[in-house]
Image (cartoon, rainbow, N blue to C red; front, side):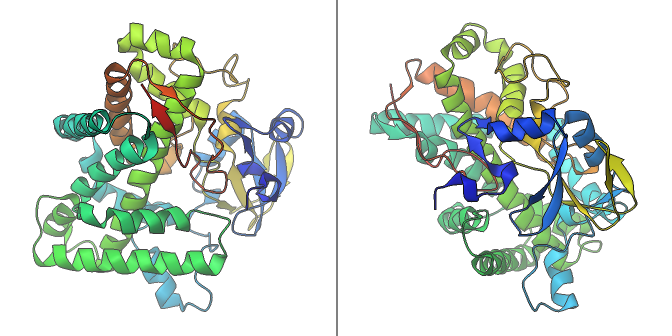
Length: 395
């Protein structure tokens, strides 16, 4: 399946850009009805101010009331077990309780302890690329393995298992697959994490899951540990790996921006923020359920109706910033929504930022003549996390 017209409207892109009819919605109505990748009707919010308001209001727009991605025929007990520990499926105060256990592990100070190891991992993969010689697939050689190895080491997941969990995750997020197959993959992922958590409970080490067992074993159930591990494993490698692949292609396609970054490497923090905004690899926020009658962009939303926010459209809203359609690493894109907003703002944002801040400069310093050697046709249009499936490069 390759025809993007079969996709939900909010997932349709022309390479780096949302398709023109999406921008028309933002300019005219600001909100419209769509069918989501789960086959349900929802209101799609497109403007920056409206999206920020929705994402920042967990009382009016609930994450806990969503029931879209549940195996058919599952009992209430089974559904509760599947939801346990998944921060994205809860509102405060339950969300706050779970997040409190994890926040200390993702502070900027704690991330700085990881910095030397991340630099080592990046250099090792650049050495391997150099030894292999060009051309290479940057996704398989660099963009995918680096975040995978980092999150494996952080969580305590054996790196030799990466092939299996990457395959499962990639298919789980592929909306072209039948829902039944994605449900099956969801259960396989849970079974894998159940085994891992059981092993760590028996012998907790210094990894994040081991720390949770040692320090919060009386506060977190086994199902919650499994849910936390599953969420962090999926989010920890899918998002950053696609940012590294797609972000590299974006810089290669805009050599003026790449030249500026090479001449002024101190701009890397701003460049990362601008790439996050401009690429917005998550097509939309997770769906929220409206809890009370409210109004968005002049449209009345009734209790029980579903709302999603188009992150690429909100982040390119001309009301948010001037010339928002362009990539400009000099501005740093303060306030973008690529990491979300409100109580569900991405927990791993400090880690993702650090990985990109290290990986992008290291790649272009090692290979200053890096170039794409073939037209990129294989954009991951049917995945919930946008990116490129492969990127053949030479130097």
